[in-house]
Image 1 (cartoon, rainbow, N blue to C red):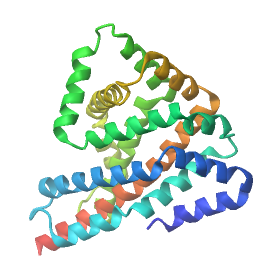
Image 2 (image 1 turned 90 degrees about the vertical axis):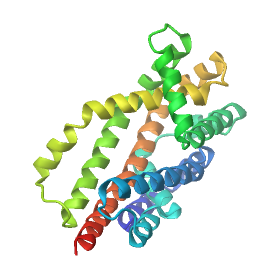
Image 3 (image 1 turned 45 degrees about the vertical axis):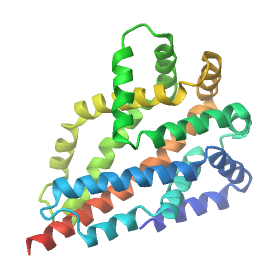
Length: 269
């Protein structure tokens, strides 16, 4: 199901032989394979909850097989890399590689991955959210830094849009699979009704995560990361990462919708 995007990525590699390899090195420095594996674990947990909430008979063996197929790490990573390369284009990765391959950059990458891995545990996620709620509006200088980081990377808006797009794709899969009768305008209306709740939840999760991830960093270390993020190359990298991950999530969400529709129809028989 990922062949179209993977082929697109191959075309990018052929068209840009000078840039594609360094851009791939940048993804390696960001430990994209570990991030994708974490997203696979998160996604499988989400799919398990979905089966309980949505499917009449709960999780079945065919549902588990569909989920395992959709969350295949190699296929997921191929989509992310293809989307990243297409968006990143001819941006010079050298200044980004200089930072992320350094000791300081690797420290940041490791902290981000460790925090995300920890937040797979619902108790850790709840504690991280609570930590942000307790400090919000307190005038904490670390929150000021995080505000600057979020703004530099447009993290809140991009995450909200990505979540809404994934929700749209899920509904579309449900409809195309015969599990739901809705027109596209009706799906759009339904998804847009989720915007306020999605934004509030994303804000809380995002700041809880950032507080947890960057807690070991000094103000100077975090400022250095913010500075590289705010450069044209840093912004291009962030846009490209979202392009890659959003493509992956959209593919998976549509597939989950199709699989859920098939389960609904089978369980109704």
